[in-house]
Every structure is written in structure tokens, then in C-alpha cells.
Image (cartoon, rainbow over all chains, first blue to last red; front, side, top):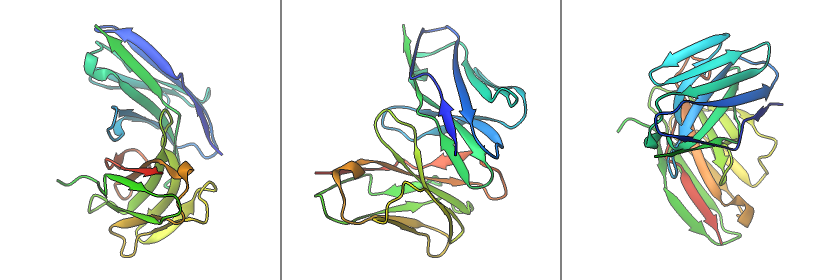
Length: 109
Length: 115
């Protein structure tokens, strides 16, 4: 089976940088994804890492270390609108996409 | 609107009743997933279709749950004899064919409340 661990809550101020960590245990690992979900909204895709290293998409970056079964999402220049829940998700082939329990990010002025 | 569409958005039902939800994925996406999400938790995998074939079901999915995707387009999720523990958001997602699970497109979900 698969299991993912991420912090339940992270707080930061506008303009700051925050890192949300994710460790996973899985069989047949293909990649690690990150999703954002605002209250009452649908999860939306942010990034995907299949290989070790850093992927950058605007203010958001995602990192993966396959040997450590670890990844993180880095959010820079935080804005109030970034307050949301962030989920890491493990892909195990074409079928299974397993989500963590999520990290609630609270951005204050 | 070419996104994933789910209906109804909200459903309140009495315990013991049957309910059915519908998901219309993005038209060219042949892979479709159903998830359940409760407050403060991540989406929990229920089942997966590739075209009309149901290829995987979660062990957590009881016999009261059934899903279909009759022509490989829209899908339905039925819950029979609903229980209060079934109260949750039911999410549908679809994925571009030929890709690994790199980007899932989610619908807005159906929020079920069993009273």
C-alpha cells in the first residue's frame, strides 16, 4: 500500500517563503504531485516530479528525492490567496493516485 | 465549459435511501477516478476506470457502492442504503490519455449529507 506524511498546518506572512514537506512509502513509485485546494473548491494540479531535483513553475517549486522518499513544495512571495490546503500525491503507475491528508497553509498580512 | 462536471453539487438524503451521482469528464480523457473526501482529509481513492472498464476498486469500497461508466464517457456512482458515515464530498477526476498520473482534473464534487 501507499502512505504519505505531511504537516497538518503551516502558517506564514505575506511575502515570505514556506516549504511543505512530504514523505511517502509506496510500491511501484512513478512520481510525486502537488495539488492546491481552496475551501469549498476542487483540488487543482500544481506540479509533478518524476525525477530527482527541483521543478520550478512561477512562484511555486517542487523537489523530489527518490532515494529518500521525500519531496517538498516551496511557495515564494506568499500572497493571501495562497491560503489553502496543499496535498502531495503519489503515482503508482497508470491507475493509482494516492493523496496525503493535506497541509493547511494560513497566510497572514 | 470543458472541465469535469459533477451533478448534483449537493445531496441531502435520509439514512437508508439510495443516491446516484454523475460525473462527465473532459471528453478526450479516457481515465476516470472517483474519490471521497471528508473534512480535513485528503481525497481517498474509491475506484478507477479506463474507458468503460473498471480496473481498480479500493478495498475500502463496501458492497453498497457501485460505479459504472457504460460507454466510456460519463460515469455514475451509486450508494445503496446510505449511512451517516457516507456523508462526504465525492470527487471525480479525469486524466489525459497516454500519460502517467501527472495531472488529474477534478470536478467541483458532490457533497452528500446523510441525515
